[in-house]
Image (cartoon, rainbow, N blue to C red; front, side, top):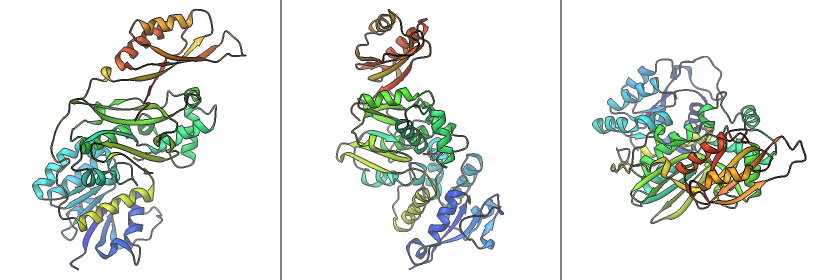
Length: 427
Ligand code: HSE
């Protein structure tokens, strides 16, 4: 066996701790081939869950990147500025880089791969999407020669946990479920990136780049978060045989691509609907492999650390890892958001009085949107109080539904903005 690969780790936080744990396990695994040489973090004092020889620890990340004795840099700093600076520096020096940084890869992946190509370095980023699910490897290797038709995925564990709890606890609001998720350590102190859907959009952007060889930056992905969902939506969906998931979807529509992230009603008996709590799932439909689904923990110390160390193993064992983000650039154009079609769930809060349904249905009919069913429960409370009215439509275009809802929301009997959720009967 030749020399061990020398590793420098930037970022000794939660994931860094997990990586060190895996790299310093005795007897098994990767320590036969790699050696952790240096660890950089701005905080040298904080107690950690793993022991590390203090001579290995430094606050000077640049010295680790530039250390001629280090072959591979693992970037777990997170954020963008420092992470980008050190990853660029390492790639320019011809050092292989492993990162878990979804922001960095989704926004700057192409630039970074260009740098890597120039210096002959390799860049791996398995941990940036769905932590414990090795989906990037599957796209890079198993599916490299297949033609992918669609990806449907649950890519955010925090939102999946929140939606699971809202389903299990009738009456629980999204905000209450967020608090519970924070108390249990599933949600960040500031969960905005998760509940807004942006975390999922960044991950979907990376999957699209690999799967469809098309570059769609996260802010070009049609995005709807989960904060406007009420428990009524979650329970009504259940009664109708659906579950609501924060879905990340990309699919070929002729010679175009659709890409969106948003809550969606999916059949309660589908595989994806069984994926609960903080789990992630990625369902791929491709010409050769047909439908296949991968499920696992998308976040947390050890699943994410496992993905990072899996990349190290790839560096050790595979000579010919592609040095490009995607094999070839195809650039499928995005189908206009307004042209995307599906069935819709509309939830209105209306006054329970004569003529309401007629007004709402005429706004839909005027845009050629056909109603499939209507649910309004009788209320024993004050009849003057607003009540939820749920309308399921037949297939319609997003643009037409948006327009109809703009009109509906102006009706004096409609008390709150109508909530629009997509229905995906077939994933
Ligand atoms: N916050 C993410 C989630 C994990 O809840 O899935 C990191 O991408």
